[in-house]
Image (cartoon, rainbow, N blue to C red; front, side, top):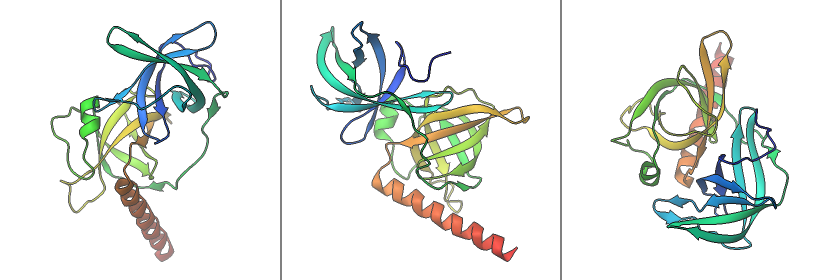
Length: 230
C-alpha cells in the first residue's frame, strides 16, 4: 500500500498554478536529490504557463482522501518533442480535510461520461455534450458547489477524471449542468453491493459556481420548509 504522504513514480497528479486551473500530469521520474520530473501539462493544446521559480500546488489522491503539497519549479528539459519540468518539494503533503461548501441531499439524474482532453477543453457551461461515451447513468445522493456523490456498481479509481452531465433543471431534461470532475473517494457502501463515489468538480467557471450555489441554497430552503410543515 502506498504511503499517503509520499509521491511516487507514475502517480497521476493535478497541478494548480497562480490562476487555479487544474492541469493533469504524471510523475515521470524521481531523482536521488529529491526532485520530481513531470511532463509540462497542456489544456486545449496550450501548455501550462509555468516558469523557473514559480510555485505550484500538486494535488493527488489516495483511498483515504485528497492530498496537497507545494512545490517550486527549478528548471526544464526537453526529451524529443516533450518538455518536462523539474519540481522541488517545499512543504510536507497534507490531507485536505476542509468541508468547503454545504452539501444538500438530493436525487438528481447524472450521466457519467468518458473525459478526454479535447472534450474537457470544449465542454460548454449549460448545454449537452455530444459524441462522448456514457459510462453509466446514476442518481446523486448529494451535491454542493464543490462536488457530487452517488452510489454505483461501476469501477472507479481515486484520481480518475470524468465528464458529468447533471440534470438539475427537472423541467428541462435537455439542458444538463456539465462539469469535469475528479474521483476523490470510492469505497463500499454498507451491505448494498454498491460503492459510494465522491467526485470533486474542477474547472468551474464563475457562472457555473454561482448557478449551482443558488440551486443548493434554494433546495436547502425548500427542504427545511418541508420539514417544518411535516
